[in-house]
Length: 220
Image (cartoon, rainbow, N blue to C red; front, side, top):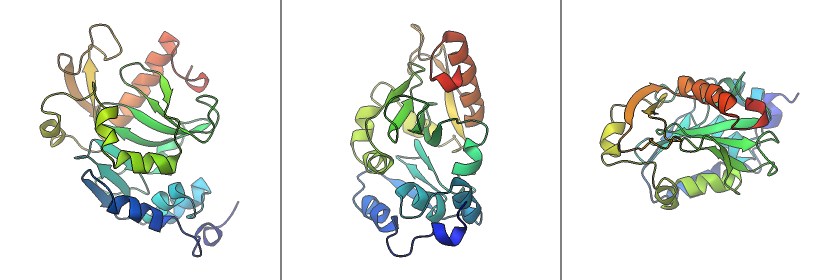
């Protein structure tokens, strides 16, 4: 296990890459400063700051994108208390949860537990309850999330007035829909929306996926 000094790369850090992406962003975002737990988070993950994921974990408290619709996890912050290390503890096996959204969707970096594309990003879609491959790396994911392609991706998962509704939602919450979006009756416009903890939504997804035979092998 490498100590913190060996994980902080001062010669070729990824932070400038992230700063360049933020400078080119077409969507509004909020870059949260790192928490005092950033060293523990980076050490626990055993990532170096030469990687974009390691840089996000150590140099930021997280990233809120598009009015807070998308939450990219870092070392934690009062506005986004979850961090990459603790959030994945006991939840993820052979993948790492790295981001989530207000509609109850989860983004993960595949370590072999979600499909054949190891090292690629996957999305646990609330309207299918399936892990869907995005065919991009984590670095590409960050650039994509800050671009106008995000709106295209969420076509069908956003409703009239979603920006207004986000104002009452914490970054540790998401909207839960009933009827569920993956049912025939489910609809972002017609289903009842309730704000719940993201952790509660994740556990509910795990249980539903288990009962329905959906999701990855690690969830069933």
